[in-house]
Image (cartoon, rainbow, N blue to C red):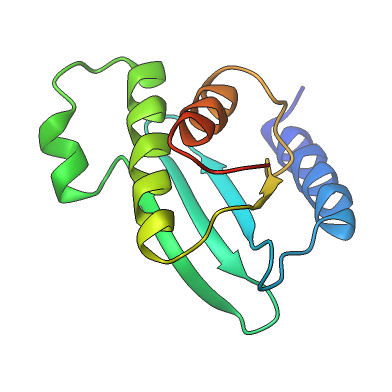
Length: 121
């Protein structure tokens, strides 16, 4: 399968997921983006178009704390950091946006770690 075909299929799945998911003030959207090396997560208020909290493997405090280069451990650390930052922003419940990816692997590890940190979805 060509790379363009894969990218088009991912974009199609992402659009399909985003049609159903919308985050407001009561339950903002937790959006996850995964690249080959890094994982990014942010909590977004779609009504105002504002990012309430964000975390990624590129954050300075997380980068120094990640001693191992295992992607699953990094995803868990990002999930815990995002949950802590969400608590600071008074966010307790979110709607999970997996970004067209399947709910397994690093996406699932981030989601479970943020649940352990206190987010509800």
